[in-house]
Image (cartoon, rainbow, N blue to C red; front, side):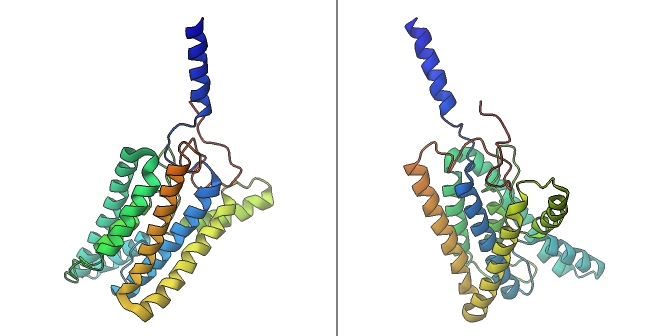
Length: 262
């Protein structure tokens, strides 16, 4: 009898405690982190674009277009330069996703710390050659890794380093709003675009004034976000502020979880 009651209490406690999905289920942290990270990406991309002769640090659609143009012109040095950047970015997303799976509820803290460190390392890397811009690779790796920070339990992530998806969702969302079928995620698209574009303006201004040292700003922002994540993870263990069964990553504040807690 007591054993049955004990098992019942344990089951009740298990149901009360959100599973460790390592993704902020609460919009209180998910949305501000997403906007801040979009601003970080826009800032770093703008600095890199000016610093590395129009090479994108996070906008791989732009780099893919440049790759195609370089191939068409048989500009093999530029082909190597852009292709290697895309590969490094892809590897960052790959590596970040594996790290996130390994570290559980410390995902936000550890990935943001690694991102801050990589951006700092970029300032001390050798410049390399035009075809292999070693100096840019740590920044590109950090921004690729950033895309794994706000994934949900099914591997879907917010578009934190590019803006096309946000613009498309905002446009289609406006139409759906008129039709009365708008998704909750519609309301996050404009702030994401605003964060990324604001970061791009800040990055441009900083690069013009400080050159490559401007990368210290997005590095410091990543470090600050990492500190906030550490405090939340330590102070609120098991809280939906850092983990839990979550809605789709770009959902609005009132969206329901995508998976039932089990």
